[in-house]
Length: 416
Image (spheres, rainbow, N blue to C red):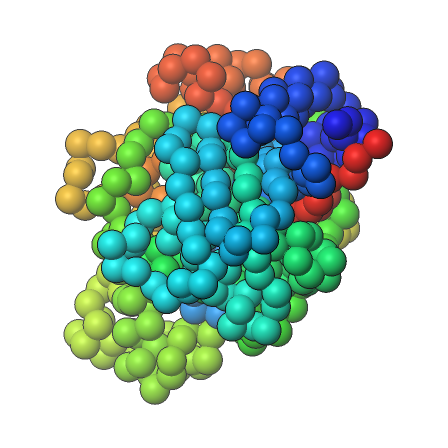
């Protein structure tokens, strides 16, 4: 089975062609070793994502700027007629999910089977066809990296079900919404829709979640390498274990402020009223909740500024918006480290190291949910080697990753 070279180049860039061909060949061999030679095997891929701007705005119906990246999960899959989904992921035990049992199971909470069951349930809930399949998966989306391995996995399962049973007709938006449903209701993590939407749509994408069922999605064609910059993420090796309460507190506190303003989410609230009533709100909601709400209102403006800068090719304005986003996340959103673990500040260390190298060039910010994990940086060509060396010296060799923005999200690969 041969994947088209053009497909691999589109997803990973020409420089990665040989490595990806070897990777797919190894995955195919692992599929055969696990399940034997099968007819009708198909190949799917779903990317991780990078949040460019819009830190913790999606869960309050805000605006985000994101992009799909070349770190992805791939699957060799074949349909079965028994309704059983069997998944073997490289490095993990094999597991099964019966599509005849689609109710959420408390014992599966926080587990990968819960995501599979949740995606299948989401398909059924939306009157889409489901069925069994056997799949071998392998991932280079680092778990806990802020590139969102869970969203990539959910979108991959959705892509498989769309391809095998729905003629690849499930839209990127619907696949993202089903994936979020699985993570919220079955896995038990109260995530917004950013991760899943970016992984499902692909490329640079501006998303306005004012109406979550009908988000405004605007793809933006922009190649940062044309401007002499590189997108990097740095894995600061922090653990996301036991951090769910930290993440959950952010939307909860923002929504508490919204409720005090008589609304369900901050996007529905009047910004002028919020700022006029800050003194009152801090007494009823607490200072941190008010600061996080202030971040929300200002971050939406930064997303607009960053998106407009990309559309017009204004790299200086884009970088300024990213720096401002990172500054607000650190000081007002307060998701760079967890208060319960003040001695563990890897993200802050990464940001300091980035600023020491970049100075007034480039930009860096906390990446994704925060508290632990990764930072994101836009690094000029002339500082790339120094930047990678400095970050690897702090966090270990291979901690800094240069990423490629891929133009498509969850997809079925074309075969020769």
